[in-house]
Length: 73
Image 1 (tube, rainbow, N blue to C red):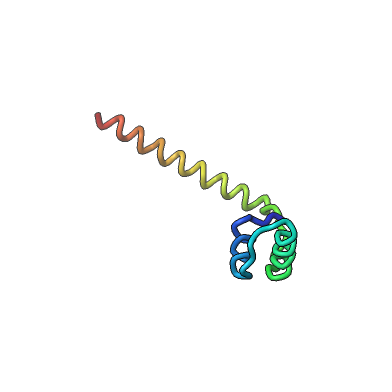
Image 2: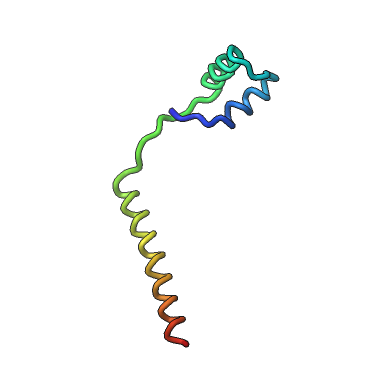
């Protein structure tokens, strides 16, 4: 699980801790207890394909607009 430092820092501030080595360990441990996160899972293949198709559509729309602008000159 990936936890961003900002999240831990905000928990530390809420607990009125100043960072020292032992305090760091305690804050990270408390953060793990307080925050229940789902494990990361990769997106389904269908979602990846859909994102790729949408990105390609955006590129094609820009190409069409660029060609229209070129023809207007």
